[in-house]
Image (cartoon, rainbow, N blue to C red):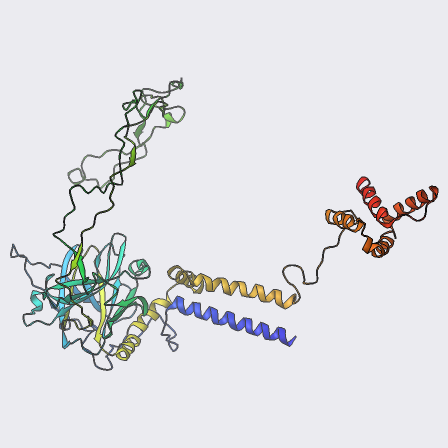
Length: 575
C-alpha cells in the first residue's frame, strides 16, 4: 500500500512538473504582476535604464526625443525622398495609458528618421546588444520594421540620411508576400581592397509568421559577442544563433583557390550526357496534327435543349443603389444569374462533349541515346585567389554612432518603442523587466486560455507534442501498474502449451525413432513399451498382439513391434 501511495505521489509530481514546463513554454513569460487585480490595466511609469547604455528611446513625451526626420532629396529632382509621416502616439488598444511609441503613419510611402547615440560604440572586448519593440497594429502586407546602426563618419548628417548612408549592422523584421524574415546583416571591410560587402545571417530556425499577423507587440533582440558568436531573439526566445565566420553568406573569408578565368573549355569537349539518336526516323503513320480531343459522335442533342435561351439572365431581384452616380460609377448594369430554364437540359448553342482522340500521338520527338563522346562536366582549373585574406576577428566592425529607420511599407501604423543599445546584458535584462514584461503581461491577460496556449506553443515547437503525449500516456501506464501489478504482456516465463491426444508430426517421428530396433538398447525399449501400453492405441495393440502370439504358440510380442503397430493403427483411426 505504501508503495502504491508513493507511486501516485510520484505520478502527480511528474505530471505537475510537465504541465508547468509546457505552460512556461507556452507563455514565454518571465513576469507576473501578482499584486494587480486588473492585469490588463497597468499604471505606466516611464522606464529608466539602470547602468551604462549607448542609446535609449521610450517616446514618453509628445516630441521625437532627439530623432531627426530625413530631408534628403532625390538625385534627379528637388523632391524629397521621404514623404512618409512619423508621429508619437499610443497604440490602438491603449492598454497602458501614457505609454507612447514612434509610429510609421503613411501607406505606401518612404519613411526615414534617425537619432545619434549618447556615445559611439567601438567593437573591442564588450558585446553589442541591440533591442527594441515592434507592434504591427494592422496585419502587415508588405514592408519592413528593421533598423540600421549607422557607421561613425565625420560627414554623417542625419538630415541627409537615406538608403545609401553607410551602416555597420542592419537588424529587424521584414515581410513581403509569404516571405517572413528577421534580418541580421553586417558590412564587412575587405582588408586587401578596402571595399565593404554585406554579410547576411542564415534564415531563422523557426516560423516567424505569427509575429507578423497576431497584432501584438514583440521584442526583437540582437546580441553580437567578441568571440564572433551572435544570437537573435524574439520575445526573449532564441530564434537563430551562429558565428560570424561560419554562418554568414557570403562567407567573411574568401576561398583560397578560385577558378582560373583564363582557362576555357576545349572546343571538342562534349559534355552532353545523351544525344538524339541519329538513326531514328519518325514513323510514316505518325500524325502530329491529330487533335488531342474529338467530339463524341455517339452523343445526341437532348430533345428539350433550349437553343434560343441565354445561359445567363439579369437578376430580377437586383436594384440600382440609390446613391449610384453615373458620372462616378458609370452606367448601371444589372448583375446576371444562371438561367433557371437551363437546369432541365441546357441552353444556348449545343456542342457534343469531347473525348480523348484514340489516334492522338502528339509531336514526335527523336529518342535519346547515351553519348559515345561524352567526357563529363568540364571544370576550369583552380588557381590561388589573389584577393585571399583571413579575418579571424570579424567582430571588430566599423564603430557605430547612430540608429536609423529607413523603411517603405504598404501597411501603416507600425509602432516602435523602447529602443536600447548596451554592452551589459544585466542592464538589458532589467530594462526588459521594466518595459516589455509589463506590456506582455497586459496582452497575455486578454489572450487565450491554457489549453489553447499549449496548442499554439506546440504549433511553434513541434517537439512539445512529445511532452503532451508523455503526460497523457504516463497515467495510463501507472494505472495499470497500480491495479494489476502482476499484469504483463506476453506469456510468463514458465508458460507451456498443452498437447492434445492426437498424434502429431513430432510424435510420429519420435515414435518411429523409438520403434527402431536397437540390440544394445533392447532393455530400454522394453521399459518404454510397457509405459506406452498403459492406455490408448498402444494398450489395444498390445492385447491384440498378445492374443495373436498365443494363437501362434509364441511368447510375448516384441516391444518394437507393439510400437510400430500402434503407430499404424492411430494413423488409420485418428479418433
